[in-house]
Each structure stands twice: as structure tokens, then as C-alpha cells.
Image (tube, rainbow, N blue to C red; front, side):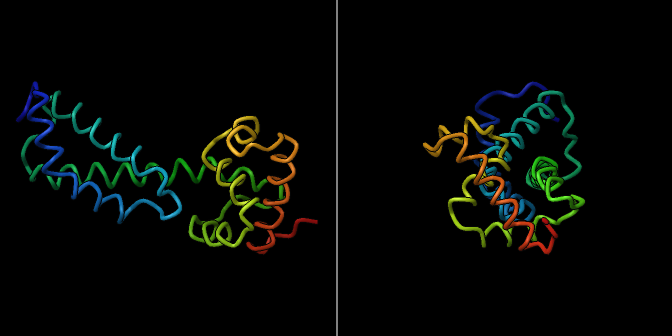
Length: 162
């Protein structure tokens, strides 16, 4: 329906659909991933632009419905991506990494800030060196806080850590 799309046309589509996209994200992105909202919005519009430019939008639904679906799918994809990144850290506890994000989020909120900040950055994929720089602490401190934070999380989740 659109084929080659001008910047002006796409800018108008973004303006027309931004509330719809944010609604889809707020309904589907896990609350612990609010830091990822901008990434999901960007990926949503990137995919929409590519599809529009390739003529894949056929007009069987409204543009808002179509972009809502893309935003929902991108939110779900981000949930899954972050679930896979974070859960392997719990293998150190000797537990199968099968926690739902809600349980992890609740446990994470109950961690003391000094552990939560390190664990949260690990969840985002930062290395120990990057966390050290961001928090202005030594890498040894990062390692010990990550270890202790995982221990506390394990207890909060009911995992034996002996």
C-alpha cells in the first residue's frame, strides 16, 4: 500500500501512532524492563518502516492496529531476551533457572540497593569492568556484591545456596 515511503509520511505515521505504540508497550513489556522502553519503541518503528518500504502493509487493518501488533511483539521479544540473559546467573546457586520475571522482579526489589544496582546492571548485560566504571567501585567489589546479591536473591526465591 505504501511502497517507497517519504520521511514526511513516516514522521506523520509516528506522530499518529506514538500513543498506540506506548500503550502496547505498557501492556506487554515487563515492569522490571522500563529501562528498555526506548529500545522497544525504536525497534518497533524500525520494523514498521522496513515493512512499509517493502510494501508489506496491505491495509487489511488500520495502521494503528498493525503498529500496535509490532510493538506488542517487540515487547514480548524484549521480555524473552532479558529472561534468557538474566536467568543463567542463577545456575551458580545450583538451581534450575526457571523463575518467572514477576518473582525475580519482586525479589530484586527486596535487595539492598548496593546489591540491586550490581545485579540490575548484570541483567542489562554489562561486564564487571563496565559496572565497576559506572558505579565507581572496584571490580572486586562488583564481584563480591554480585555473589552476595545472588545469594540473597536465592534465599528470597526459596533456593538452597549452601
